[in-house]
Structures are given as structure tokens and as C-alpha cells.
Image (cartoon, rainbow, N blue to C red; front, side, top):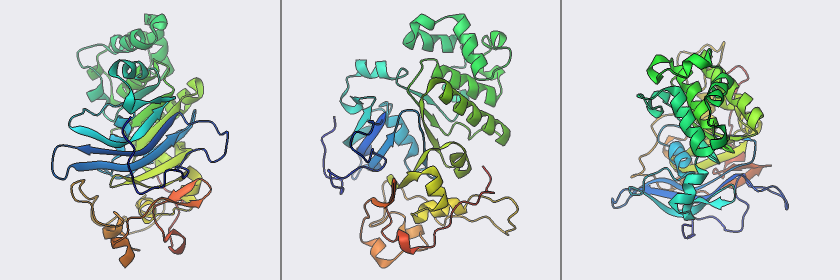
Length: 356
């Protein structure tokens, strides 16, 4: 376990997303005040800082933010997939199914990978082995994590479950013989072969067309109902979030800036960054000369601004925002924000006609 150090938050306060009542079920995943740096630079690149995130059994949580915000670093840290060095876990804890991940030896960690947490990545062509058949790769996952089920029949069943036609034949195909959508289905079959309790899906639909995106999301929902697994979905698409999420955490420049139940967050965002992301979603039937865009870009992990990290891009920024680094504060039931002015700002909700 990484030694706990001060992160600017009170240690005895309820963490965002954590059970709010005595006797509430412990979350499957509980990330507490996690800070990760990269490299031996002076100062080092601080990818994420003080991140708190929970996922309960059977629920779907979406982690949302622009590229460079720290989404993938957070996701990869769950199973300690970040190479160390160059990554360094500065402080915090990662509790997964009752195990503190940062304190586990590698042998025990391997037993949790696959059986408790599995991953589906953005580019299936990069995550699948190009010189081995799809069936042999799924069979290997079964041998590692479910040896009693390691049969050709189970491979075929899994391929059929994820909607691959003629699974007996396609099991002998190589990845390049499948379309992008079929490759992603095969990657999902390999991820669920071990019956994980948590599926981490990192931008799993980004490289796919809209129709296939919808099919993959439907598939993930069906599999969640079949196996009762939790899903942590990494995305920048708020249309997808609306379709699948129970709760949402918004990350910006390495910090969680807002977290809330999905419907609540989209109906009434409480942070200017969340509201700006929502305004950038195209709306069917809306006539406009140009799409809404957030000015500027996510700051480098080497050069984060003082005070609120979003203030250089925020249309509502005040002089105090440049000086004071805000804490996460409650903004409703299960709703937390890093903006102290949230109840004074005209933050727009997501239109029901917005595209996915």
C-alpha cells in the first residue's frame, strides 16, 4: 500500500461515490486519493492527482474527459498495468474486491487479472495477437482463469454469445480476417471468458461506425445482465454515457471535477467543464453555423495552472479561481463538484435530442 499523505482532502469525509449510509455494501472498486507520476523529471509529470472513484457490484460507471485528462492512466492503474518505472504511485489506495492492489505481490496480482478484472481496449487490432487464431486466444484465457471450461465448445459458445456469426468457423480466423466490429466482439469474448466481476472498457467503440457502436453497447448491456458484472467505461462521448451509465465521473487535467448519477449529471451539471462538454454534443435539428467548442486545450501534466485547473478555459472564471485550488464539495445527493460557484452559474443540461 502506498503511504497515505495529505491530498488537501479531509481523511474522515465521505469520498465521492462511496456508500453514504452505515451498512451500505462495500464497492467492488474503491480508488482513494490516487496520485501517479511519470518519469524522473524535475518536476515529474503528474498524470493524475487525488483521484477518488468507486464502482459497485453490477453497476456501470463512465469516466469522461478529453484526451490527456487521465482517463486511461486511471483505468490501467486498477490492475497495476502501468510499468513502474516510468510510472510511480505517489500516494493513495486501490481496493478491488477486498484486495489492496498497490500492496499485492505480482503472483497474487496475476490471479486477480482476468478473474476479477478484465479489459477491452480501444483498438482490438492492437490488443489481439495477429499471428494466432481468435479461438486459440480465447482458449488461452480459459486455460488461465477457467481451466474446467477450456474446451473448443466453450470458445464457440462465447463467440456465439457476442454475436459472431458461424462461430465454429470464425474461431479459426485470424484477426485480420475480421472487420473492426467483429474484432471488438472477439476481444469482448476473450475478456468475459474468465467471468470477471469488473469489465474495464477503454474507449471500446471509438474506431467503429455509429451502427456498430450501438451494437457493441447493446452487447455489453446484455453480457452485464448475463454475468452480473460491473462495467467501468472510459469515454469522451456523452451520448454513449446517457445510453449506458448509472453514474458518471468527469476528469480534467488529472483530477475528478464532478461525479453524480448519470441522469442527474446530464440534467443539471454542476461544473463548468461538464457543462462545456455537454454543449459540445451536436443536437439533431439544431441550426448553427458552427459547433460549440471548448477554447484552448487540456494543460500538460508538466505545466498545470495554479488554482482551478480549468480556469484558463472557463467562461465563468473569477479572480479567486486563479488562486485557490478547489476541493470536491457536495452539490446534491450523490453529486460532487470541484466548482465552489456551481449554484450561481447558468450551466446547461444535455438536450434529449443530442446525438450519441
